[in-house]
Amino acid sequence: MSNTTFWLVISAIGIATILMRGSFILTGERFKLSDKFGEILRFIPASVLAALVAPAIFYHNGMVEALHGKERLLASLFALIVAYKTQNIFYTILTGMGTLYLLQYFL
Amino acid sequence: MSKPRTIKESFFTGARTIIPVIPGILPFGMLTGVVTIATGISPLKAIFMTFFMFAGAAQVSVAQLMSENASAVIIIATAIMINLRFVMYSASITPYLGKMNRLQRLFISYTLSDQAYAVSIVEFTKKNSPYQKFPFFLGACTSMYVTWILSTISGIFFGSLIPDAWSFDFAVPLTFLALLAPNITDRPAALAAVVSAAIAILTASLPYNMGLMIGALSGIFVGYVSSKRKDTSHE
Image 1: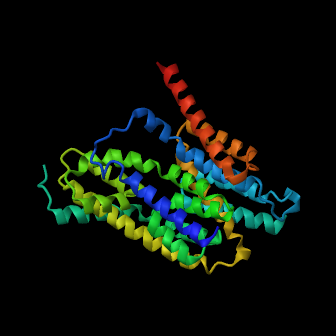
Image 2: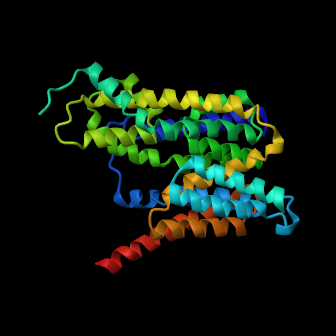
Image 3: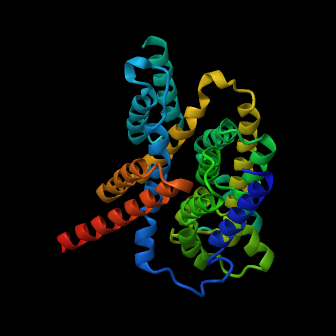
């Protein structure tokens, strides 16, 4: 990505984000949010984050031959379980990185 | 009923309500800085991102997509989707805030965050809250903003010191997993995530990272439909 594109993309996102945050604050409740829209919005974070992360993990080729280079996939599964159980970002990273290091060291 | 508080007291109480959530923000902010650097973005650009976007999940997503050479349109669309939740917060909090001048509206529209919203809506929905709502919210937004900027900038600084050999780029997907987990609140949400992940994997070879959008939209659709179905079966 060229420098110009970078600044344009970040500026566009920055402006769009202010408009979304300000959607009601700036207009002063002239609009109402429909229930249906709220119901759809609820599924956005889970879907977008899953679609972002899954291919990056699934297609990554590592160095551990015993696992056909899929050590990150295994480490991610452990990390996901910890993420779900603890809801703690720090423990999730610790588990994932820890598992990856162990697999790389022992296998 | 306790006596009404002054503007100053309301502001500082709002600012202080962020303190209990700082242990959650600080590592996430630092991590956002670290992983942005891990995807290969320069420190100067990373600092600009944190000031201009002020949104963790979106910042990490944009950094990840830039490292994959995704097209500008996909990057902007992804960030907008991730930040759409702010429309909900904006709609929910505005009725409490009362009269504001244009500068105040603009400042709140820039600094509204998950945490400032969460702590404020708890206070505002209490009966007999003695605090003035706009100053309280302004306090929460301001202290959250300062905490976030300081923690991401320190993360950007540390990130540039971590050697490549540590495989720290793996912290990027791990951060997404950690952000994903709290959103799996029920079966339809879990279904949305699974469908979205599977379709994104299957369509990963499509150009311009279109697989991301196709996966995410399929997940949202399936999640929404399955939640409707659950509703009707209970009636």
